[in-house]
Length: 542
Image (cartoon, rainbow, N blue to C red; front, side, top):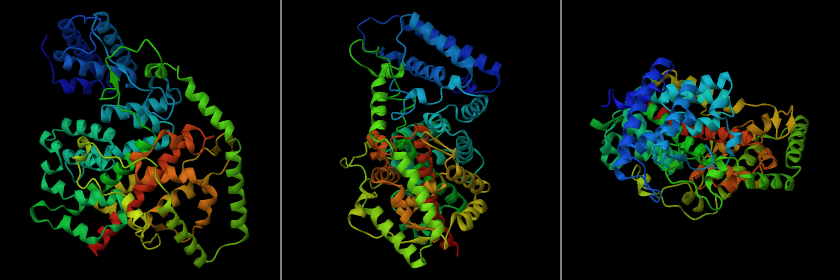
C-alpha cells in the first residue's frame, strides 16, 4: 500500500480533538507500519540492532511508543500499544523507553501519569497535544502545578505559534540559539525538529555562520543576556536596529528578546528538574532487549528502583527538624519586622553585602564542561560565561526597581510593541510568585510568602536588582548554603546542576515543592534578564 497522505499530516491528525480524524489517521499509520514490518521479517536472536534499511520503521515505532505513553487520548494510546504488540508478534524488535520517566531527579510514580489524571489536567494535556503535537516531559513535571502549567503553555503557544513580528522559522531558530548557550541539548533537539517541521532551511542547522546575517547579529545579545545582562547598553540595541539591510524592527527585537529570555530560563528549569530526553528522540528509547542479569534502567521504570527511595527516607530522618527550624525563623523574622524597621542606609548596606556574597557563592564543584560541537555550533564564543567574570571580581552595578521595574516600565513597553504578550508574561510571573498551597513539607496552614519573596529577591540580587523596601538580611536567615549553591548554579550555570545538588537542599520537602522552587527560579531569572533588555531598549528610544 502506498502512502495515502502527507506523513506529517497523519501524525498531526493523532493530536486532533476529533475522534474520527484520529481513527482514520491511526488506520493509515497502522497499515503502513505493519506493511513495513512484514517486509523486514523476524530478526535473528543474536542481532543487537535492527537492519539499516529498517531505519524509517524504527523512527515510526519510536513515535508510536511515545504516543502509547504520552497521548492524552485513550483511543490513540490503546491503538499504538496494539500496533507495537503486533509488530513484536511478527518477530520484529520494538523500542522500549530508557531511563525512569520524565525526570532523572523525581521518581516516575510521583509524576502525573497521562492515563490517570483528572478532567482538568486531561483538558490541559489535550490542549498541549493539539497545539504542539506532543506532551513533553517539561509539561509533565510542571503538571504538579496545573494553574501555572496553563499559564506557561498559553504564553509559549503565543510566542511560538500565534501572529507576531517574527516568522515561525526565526522563532524556533532563536529558541535553538538561546538553549544552546547553556548546552541544553534537550531544548535544542526539540526546536531543531520544530524548525524543520515549519519549513526551516536545513543548512542553517550546520552552524550560526550558515544562518541569515540578521540572526547572526543576535549572537551578541544572546550571549550577554544569558550570562551578564547588566552589561547591555543602548548601543547594543542601536547596532541591531540600524544594521542597514540586516536591521531589526523594534517589534521584531522585542519578540526576539522575549524568546531568548524564555529559553535561557527554561534551560534552567530543564537542568534544575533533571528533565529526561523525550521518548521518541535520541536517548529516550532503545531497541536493545532488557538486560537479564543484574540491575538495569528498565527496572526503575517498572517500580523496582526502591533503593533510591530508601536513600531518600534515610536522608529525611538524618535532617529531621529542618522544616521546623525554617518555620521558626520565619516566625522570628515576622516578629522583628513588627517591632523595628531598619534605616534606609542599613537596608542599602545589607543589599550590597548580600550582592557581594552572592558573587562568592561557588556553583557546582565539577570542572569546566566543554559544549559538544553539536550544540556549540548554534552560538559564538563558547568561553563567555558567568564564571570567569565573578572570578575576576568584577562588580555588578545596582539597578533599583524604583528606577526601572517590570510593573511600571517593562510591562507597558512589551505590550505596546508586541500586543498581549506583556499581559501573558505578567500573569505567568504573578502565578509563579503567588502560587501557594499553604504547606511546608508535612505542615499545613503555613504562610510561605516570606520564603517565596526571599527566593525571588535573592535571584534578583545576584543580577544586581534591588528592592528598596526589602530587608536583605532575611535571605541569610531563610536560605542555607546548599540551597544558595543550588540557586546560583541553576540560574547562572544550569548545565552544571546535578542530582546530588537537587537532593541536598530542602531534604524533607516534597518533589512538588522543589518543582515550585524551580518555577520561581525560572521566572525570576526571566524577569531579571527582561528588565535589563527592556531598559536598554527604553534608553535607545528616549
